[in-house]
Image (cartoon, rainbow, N blue to C red; front, side, top):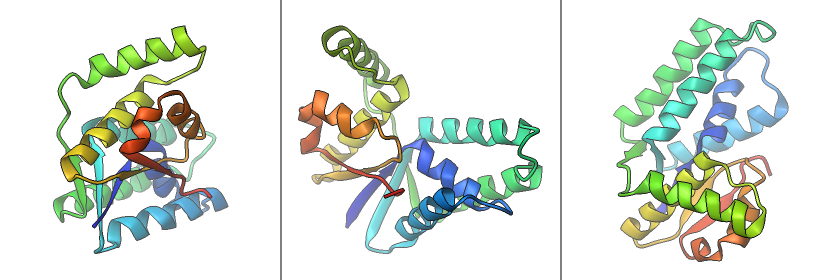
Length: 171
């Protein structure tokens, strides 16, 4: 079975694709997310942090007066569908690995101090989560993200290439 770990942005794009007038990029990413989640030959997963970030972004969209298509009905609908995927076992919520936050902080600091590179804290958390899950699965995990920073993160930290591939659903 092929393993896919979602960071937050592809799920947010999927949610945006469910609005009345989605942009083409969100529609493309949304289709990819649904294909992966519904593929019986795949196992898909998120972290609890992904779920918190996702809910936060839904509420950000809902509050934004310049995008009225993201209303309470939209937010409730996509949140319910995501929870249905979890309840049906199509999307696994992973337990947090030991010392996840401490490791993320150390890597963010190291990226800044040693490489002058930006590594966002939540990106480090997702990278560690996906890598930990790969060890548990005994196989490489596809980290699904449309964040353009991830390939360069693997250049700074090549030790993660053993555990994760980056899959950008926007390409």
